[in-house]
Image (cartoon, rainbow over the protein chains, first blue to last red):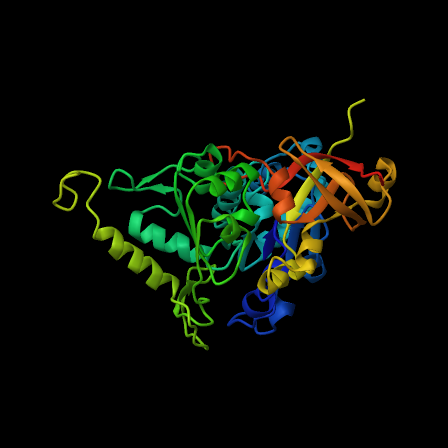
Length: 299
Length: 114
């Protein structure tokens, strides 16, 4: 298994023990001893200790390295000088290719070191291509290491309700998808939206500053169990029960397996779902802003 | 002479994740998100003393951090995500919906005591 641009020892601390290298499988009865783990990163993170092979590459050279690997697995010639630019000698790449081909079942877990740096979605696409092409030799898959709890759940539900995972515009009454145009960061940084409902997120502590400044200018409503940077700049903060602790729900694992949550505690606060449902009911009672939408004309 | 530019890489740490659950107003969270880690040789070259205050400037803004020696390759600065990195990070998404949250060029200078 290859971890690329991710640091599971710190960011997904249960991944090694509960999901990947330490687990015993039907064909890997010896657990860790039957597995080979490779880590590709630009710095030696705590995850490097768990790896059989740690490959430290130069920042921003992921795409080049993946492209070289794609050529090498097919036995094509690669320019050694171009490979050296990635920070790794050709011999290391050949060693990695040999390990990948020798695997009975390989997986590439790619993190934000790949998807948030120069190249972004092109890097992710290259990794997916590499995994797909490895299937000419052995079974290989690729899976993203997500950044926050249940991001996968948001993607899955958006996908089965609208057909797209994120950045969906419903203004015309049907879903349209265009990252860069309808995605949250772009809408806020450009100042396109004039109201915002924030649910289970803290963009005030994570987004680019112009986006945060815009959230402070417009009516922002936050649903969160805690006071956050976003709730401070919001006009309205509705305290809600913490999902999984005092509110039920479903979370999706990073491999898209849905898991039901049973709350262990009772909360005096409503759940996110209840608040959204009540807002929706209140909105429904108001006259439509487009003629004919709910049978009432615009006044 | 143009100042040397470093590549700033923001990421998550376990301690930061724990502090998010304690609350983002805690002094521990504040300390974690306002501390950068630099290569020891880079610090010497830039005239930065260990555990001193530095000003970090990107094309988008500037913020002040505590600078510590860390196990990072030359030319790279590691920092935990937080409100200060919001000021520095890339503001466009290049049509992907994802801002450049890692790997922006920055300049670093020591904050001289007043």
